[in-house]
Length: 180
Image (cartoon, rainbow, N blue to C red; front, side, top):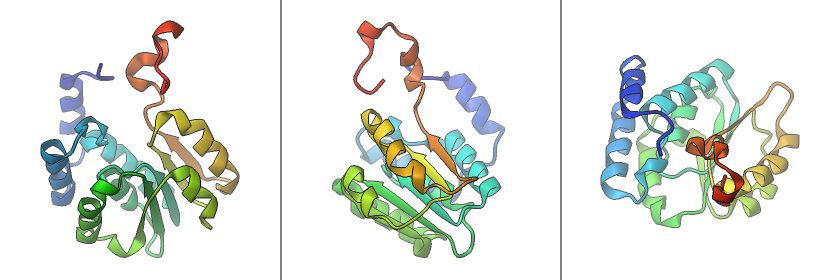
């Protein structure tokens, strides 16, 4: 079940700024070559993330869940000139592809891409992120939140993706999966 219909998504995308060539490339290649392309943030959500990041102008961003790097690059658009984005993902199979995308970007020197279990990586990070984007395994959202809330400075932001889980949160408890 999609949260918004195709027609509404197309309307939103046609009334927002376009994707950069690199984001369009990531979007296309993810849909053609990577399993579960539905996990990609995509054009409209990417523009929302970019807008939020540009409004916040974070010096540091922590992204939990990289997938193919689309959302990381959207968030990086708002980084300060000396800012840094750390993105964590457990899927080593996508590492070469994602590093390639980051290397092509204007933010290659500002992005630190770490492969591993976020539950194990987060305690070793020294960053106090101004902006956190949680978009990883849904069953650990509360754990991730608990691990980072005290690190986020006053005035910082935590964004959690998929909290409505395509409407599943409205279903009766018997139908809920472990991620809901």
